[in-house]
Image (cartoon, rainbow, N blue to C red; front, side, top):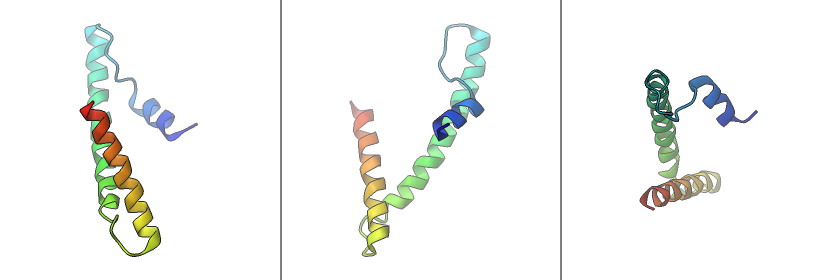
Length: 78
């Protein structure tokens, strides 16, 4: 089981289906999911700020995080 599977099982579905009672619950799930993603992106952003460090392992992590965030941004802009 992957982390994604665990999180989606814990939070529940976020896809609306057009039925008010179900969609109300799924909207709450969506709010929980976006809160989690915001916290994760904040953590990744913090690591990305290390991309110009001189220590190899720190720089490597920073560059990886920065590249990921750049790809997310480009995906949103499309």
